[in-house]
Amino acid sequence: MTVIDSAPRHSTTETSGDTDEWITALALSELTPGRGVAVLLPSGAQVALFRTGDEELFAVSNIDPFGRAAVMSRGLVGDRGGEPTVASPLLKQVFSLVDGRCLDDPDTTLAVHEVTVIDGVVAVSAQPSGASTQTSGTSVRPRSGTETTSP
Image (tube, rainbow, N blue to C red):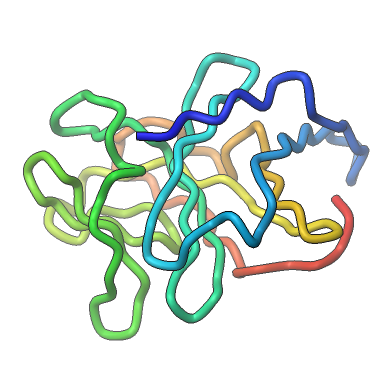
């Protein structure tokens, strides 16, 4: 497992009255399609960052809600019906990379983080998207794929 400590490399932007903190993860060219990497956030939380074979980027919580271990970045990337997914390396539950919901247990979700690419460098939002950050079954706002605008 690769953990990238990006705490000293971050920026804050104001959008709609909210403060978004973007954490620099790594160069896009270093992110292998179909593989994940773990990114350590300043809060101490971990995010699993994935680049799919069709070049989209996704970030979800790195904590497996079933096994309670930081292993989602080591999961198996695939798809179900065209929806990008990651299967936990522990018990093999499959999660949507789009909205974090578990496709095998509708009451469980992973937190989803926004991802952007700025000048060839991948950045992850320090705060999860939407209202849900726990495994509560609450839907999480989907992210839109690779972006090339500044946060």
